[in-house]
Image 1 (tube, rainbow, N blue to C red):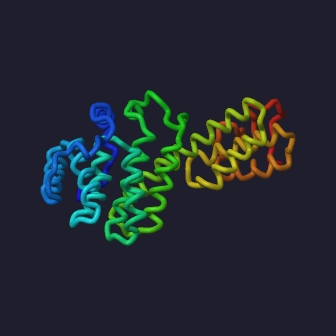
Image 2: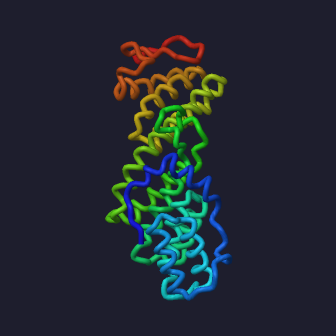
Image 3: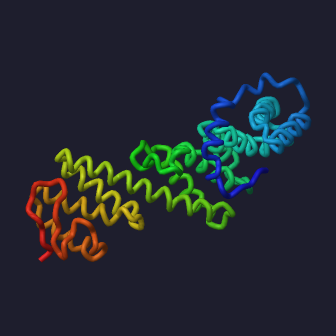
Length: 269
């Protein structure tokens, strides 16, 4: 078993490995060998960083000896090997399979963790660390999957050794997902789709209440209500905004100044 708690260090190296390794190859190309021989070859390949070879051997083991002595361990190692070659989709599929087939395995939390890590990496660019792109403006389907996977791990196995790292990643993902919703809400405001903007703001408040973006989500709701000429509802949300973010850029004292909507400033009084 390969254990680790920090999967963020792959970056450009993981992307390069993925391009060089390509998809995991078919285990049928591996020469005939006993179960123990194949398993030993797989371990040696993993230990020496020959991850594509490890995938080949582990796939062969999985195909040829599905009920063998090393069957369960092989399935776990295969998740890890797929992860190491950057085949996020295969890693997630293998993890889901293990969880389905071995729900009571003592190391099933490891499968949940790796499934989340694979989705986490699938949702990132190596350039992100260089601040050349804003990940919150991209399609965040994989990041949502990662958030759900880590949430399930923490919920099911709060005492798992992987739970603390999963929780840290959830904070990061929560903030990214909330920012993404705000980008969409701003788009709706600019296009005059005020009800859709309000709903996006409300979604952030309800689903990511601890995210920094929640405060701007309240401002989005105020402006969206102003766009629909629902000033009473806007004033109710404005009171919450003033209480939680009195220094918001759209506030001047207790007066809210819309950014996109052609409406008069709104006072809380």
